[in-house]
Image (tube, rainbow, N blue to C red; front, side, top):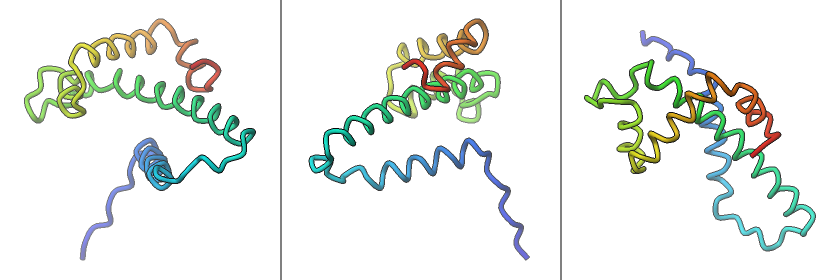
Length: 119
C-alpha cells in the first residue's frame, strides 16, 4: 500500500497553475487581437505582475526565517535564491530588504500591491 501524497500548500498550487496557463499561451500570436482587447489584457497583465511581485516579496520575507537554502549550505536565503535563479546577489539582497520593509513597516503598500491598486 502506498501513502497518498500530502496536499500542496494553496500558494504552491496556484503558482504552478498560473505558470502552466502562461506557458500554454507563450507562443500564441497576439497580432490578431483587436486593439481594445489587447489594451485590456495589457492592463490585466500589468496588474497581475504587481500581484506576483507582492507574492514574491511575501515569500522572500519568509525565506530567511524559514531557513531556505540551509540544506545546501547557503549562508542566506537571498544568496541561495540568487544562485538558483541566476540573479545577481545585490539585486536579490535589495529585494529581500524591500520585502522585510513591506512585511513590517509598509503594510499599506503591501495591501495595495496585492490588490493591484499600485504597480
